[in-house]
Image 1 (cartoon, rainbow, N blue to C red):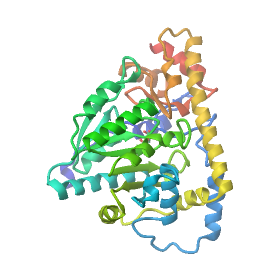
Image 2 (image 1 turned 120 degrees about the horizontal axis):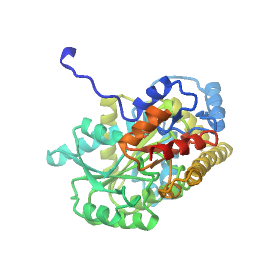
Image 3 (image 1 turned 180 degrees about the horizontal axis):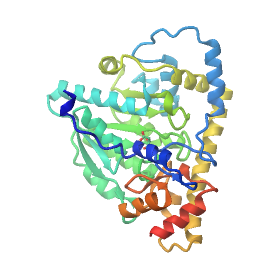
Image 4 (image 1 turned 30 degrees about the vertical axis):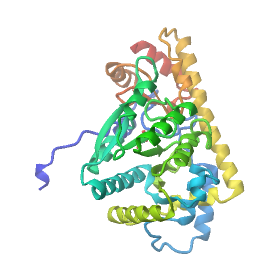
Length: 401
Ligand code: LMR
C-alpha cells in the first residue's frame, strides 16, 4: 500500500527549522518559524509559566481523562480573555469553548465543524474565504477537511498596504452559506492589520451578507495589547448571530510545544449554541477524543491569579516591545547601510511578521551565501532579529538587493 505514495515537499515554514539547525555558519540567522526569541536567540519559558507549572506539579492529584471540552476553567478564562469578561454575548450565555491541541487543533476542529454544518444544511461542499496571502497552513488544513478554499484580496505587495477596497468588494459578494476567515491581529504573514474603523466596516459587511466569520487569533497581545488586539473579535461577536473563534496560547504564553489553544463558537441564543456545541464535541471525539491538559492547567493557573496574570501581562509586554523595537532597528540599520529602497513599512506593521518584499532569488541568495533563513515569500520573523545580528542582516540584505 505504501508503495503508491509519493513524497511530500518539506513544509515551507517548519522545513526551514531543520535547514537552519544543520547550517554551521557562525553568523547564521533564523527568521523562519514564528516563535519569539530573546536577544540571544533563545525562546525562554516565561517566569509566570514556570511558577504556574510548579504549582500544578505540586497540586495535581490525577491524570484521569478530562473529556472532549478540556478544562472548564481554562475555557471560561480564555473566553473572557478573548471576548472581555463583560461582553454581551458571554453575559447572554451564547458562547461555548473547547480547549484544543494548539491553534492548529482549533482550526482543524472548526474545519470539521463547518463541514458538518454545511452537509447537514445543504449537502454541498463548504467554502471558506481566506485572505490573499494567509498563513501557509490554512489552505492545506481546510482542504484536508474537504472544504473548498477561495481567496479575497488583502495585501498590496507593491504599495505595502491593505487592498481594503478590493477586500470589501470581494466580501460583499460572499453568500450566507460560506465562511470567511479573518486574522484578529498581527496578520500572518504580512503584519498588516485592519484598523478599528476598517473592522467596523468588515463587521457591517458580515451582517449584511450573513456569512459566518471565523476569526483566527494566534497572537493576542503581540500587536498593541491584549484588549486592543481583540477589538475585531469583540465587535464581531456583538454584531452577528454565528461566529467561530480559534485562539492559540503558543505565542502569547510561550507554550508552543504544550499544544494549547481553544475553539469558541457563538450561537444566536443559549439553546441554539448548545445544539451546535454537541456537534463540536462530536467532532472532537472523532479526531482526538480530548485535548492535552498540561498547557491548559498552566494558562488557567495564570489567568486565575491576580499576581500571575499581572506578571504574564508584563512579560508579554516585554516580548511585544522587543519585536516592535526590532522593527525600528532593522529599518534604521538598512538606511545606515545605504539602502535606498524604502523599508519604513516594516516599522508600521504589527506582530511577528513582515514581508521583506524581495524576490525568491534574493531570498535564496540570503540563505545560500549568508545563512539567513526566511520563508520563500520573503516573510521574516521579526523576533529573530537582535542587536547582535542586525548589522550582518542589513549588510547581507544590502548585498542581495
Ligand atoms: C508560523 O507561521 O511560523 C507559526 O504559526 C508556526 C507554524 O506552525 O507555522
